[in-house]
Amino acid sequence: MKEIGHCPRCTGMDIIVMKTIGARREVCKNCGFTDIYSGLTSNTSVMMLVLGLLLLGLFSVFIVLNRTTAFQRLGSRTGHGRT
Ligand SMILES: [Zn+2]
Image 1 (spheres, rainbow, N blue to C red):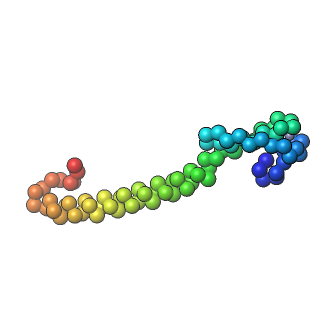
Image 2: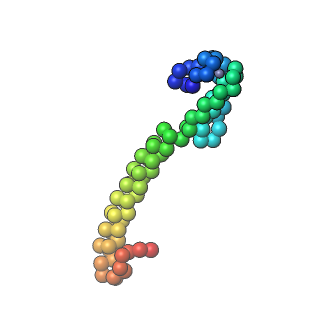
Image 3: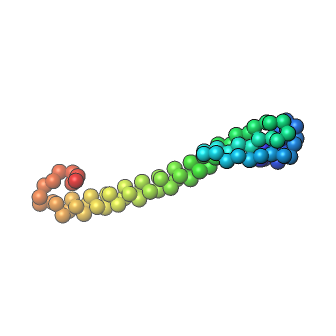
């Protein structure tokens, strides 16, 4: 309903917007037509991107740390350097 600005059934402009967790409902006051928008779609992609970058950053940090610890523990022989 948001795209066209009115109810697709009765073309009524009286639309109630109800925000719920993970989705947004748009209910036509005139005929009761309900449109549900999953508000997660756009947020999820952004979240995934941030999460991916975070994991990438953590991974590189892990590699750097692993390398330094490997160099430090070269003589003590601790296998994979896991703690
Ligand atoms: Zn309607």
